[in-house]
Length: 224
Ligand code: CA
Image 1: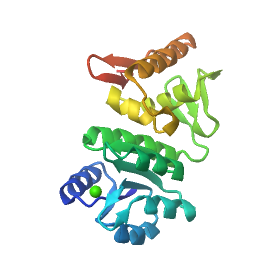
Image 2: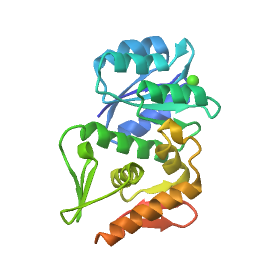
Image 3: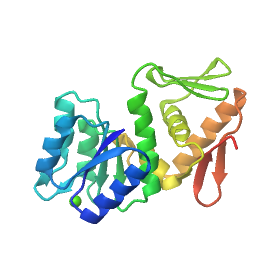
Image 4: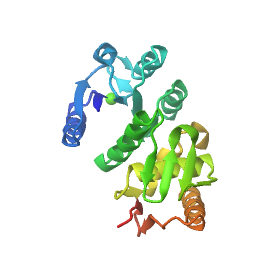
């Protein structure tokens, strides 16, 4: 994957860059809006975008990506207090957001999920043992039998599978699930009940129970 980091804090930009390279991606860094708008023409797979830039608002980058019909995924990095910007970014078509400060593990979880989405924008299926998912049709099959899931449960399942064998925190899951801005305020209880329902449906359909509790932290999707 070819990734662009737009971030004016050099230290943060550098640690994200190191991390992304260590994950096997190539990446470029833009430290201000002007260079970001210029570099964007090189068609990246994913842009990790800080909004508060010295020479303007990072949302200009989202606008350009969408206006020009680029197939680029965008993850917004937002300060805790900039809810308006975040909502505007998602309305403009950004794919996900991450609140600063964040752990690299959270960024990685968001990246994996977005890489999946960018990759699977076509026809390809995700297969995991008896589970088969067709993202373009929001279709899940267990042992070839279709399973009815809500949109939220479907998103959760894809998020889990994209991050299999990785511990996902409740906070991270909550942020990811509430990227649809209507859900701002996704609580631990809500996450718990969506996961509980998803798990119940999967097991009832004859699927193994892959979603494990990680006590005090969150969840992990694993067949280990
Ligand atoms: Ca900034």
